[in-house]
Length: 428
Image (cartoon, rainbow, N blue to C red; front, side, top):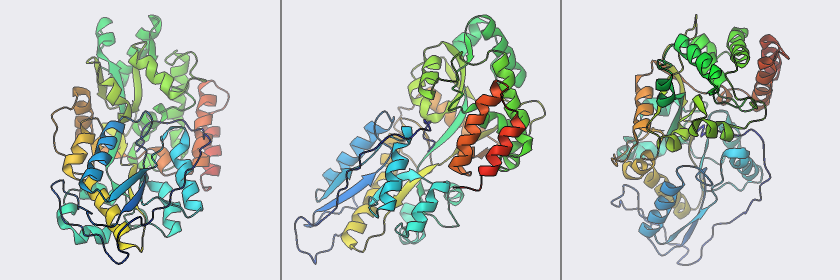
């Protein structure tokens, strides 16, 4: 998940280690797993189980309410299972820090909802994570819930370690009321986008809300310019004109005056507070923005000479991992929990809040119009790519982000920034 949208700076984290044990019942008794009405398997038996679960559904995450309800309902249906919720906010790198520490100490949670892609490497190397192919074959009815094309895209080294669930998309959010006030066309073409930048800048409205410390606009510009194949060529010199466009936008006063010190949360606040007319960001922001009927979303427009027409940054950057366990009751309880979370009924409650999904969902009828627009944008896109940071080393991407601000203010050239990032791209 890109989930979201996030600061790159690490914060300190106090880890609470909890060990699941046997509190009651006969040691030889195995937990049975009959089907229940939710689509999960009941683990009702005399053996009490503590199931450690680590996810990003914490803090200000929009899915906290759906997560809390799902955990409560699962425990009601399975009274012998105690969920030890170790969920940690994804922002400020806290979740990544926790999972890395748990991996290093051999103390992984039974179930994790965590980043996939390059982040899967350390979990694979721990040799403590289940691959899902066998379990999906054993339960074809459950397997039918998943979009097979998405499942294939999230494999790591041709193995499925993380079951895809909530996906994200990135797009150009714009405020129709502000555009209508100045009789501007929707920013669906680059000329309309640039005209809007000029008009808003002249009328003391921030044209484009962004931070230059944790920006997302480079994702849009690179993809629009070089297309999906070019985007895969990390830090290729062909990206340079896209970075130069950021410099051009800076000179046109497209960004907030304090963009060099502004964080992404404050940039979002400028847009949601109608002090800025546009913002390129992710579906995680759409939940809050959907309360304003004037907020719309469209793919970032094709830049002059670009190859990425109607293509978007989207994907399933997180998924459900499960730890291997020789204790069959513990293993079955973890599996039952994941099957419950990926059932259409539970996934439907998450979908009503936002995101795009790799599993079938039951329509709750409560989805906001902006969220429907976002899902339609994904469905109509010609192609989608994963964000740049999903396939490059963190060290190189940090250098790349830092370099964008230098390019914006003519302190470095785009070619210099790309070369420096490229030199680090082989490091993990």
